[in-house]
Picture (tube, rainbow, N blue to C red):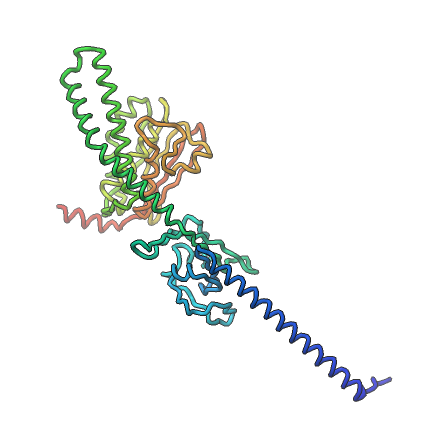
Length: 399
């Protein structure tokens, strides 16, 4: 058996020189790569700072990886705070507190599915310097396909917000200014109807048309006022524990005659026992009224409208289902948008469902709709329940 020949001193020296040369080249390569990375980072930082909108790159631990001056100002990140990649072992990057994050972003970084609509607008500053930003988050995933961070853009929508506020304020002012003369006109027409009804068939017809038109215009103005109040934040819900079964019964009372005249069956599937929810005593009936009125309006003679209430865990579910014309797929996607209606309705501006949605959300609830064209629609309102003992205590106090 032959043994390998020991390396000579010259061979060892040569290998040592080659190894030293390789280490030196690796060092130069790493230095060059670091220089290039630094150059790219500087260029990226320069680009970020030149962008007027806010830009934030944050990992799932809510540590800042990149941020520009606008985003620093919006989120209150110190200008002197160093931003770098902290890596797995931590680093010097500032960590955003939950309170500083846009609503919904913290949940997104924790792995929840959050739509862009759930990131609320952020107002920054006051007076003439007040700006409004609209955050939009783009999540990115790691090797495990779970959310590892997000790129957040803060779009400056100050002008858009101001125009929207001005438009809403104009609508609110106009509708309030129109309310008084229309009310007076309706009273005058009703007085004429009571005094001169039956004297002349043609006169009766004209007065009847005038009464109908006054009611239609009055309903549209009331819709505008309610919409402007909700949009401008003027509505403060006075929520208290109430039996929504009883409230619904009372709200439905005026609809029975209307349903009978239309040849539509109005069915109440309401439980015998109370279902207590924290609702506003005047706004909850508005929700029921609007949903039932819509259902009756679009259900032909021989059809059926069913109102049901059920308890589902910690929630109360109100549903209004009809066997009417239904809603097409395109219209269904924007059924809660203002001034949108698949079919124009006399005496309505297409704001009713928009108001309903805002009122439901103001109660801490949610609303959804399912529909098949030609087979009807079903609106489902989900509200958080209130402890029954609060309702009982309220009853004792009232007694």
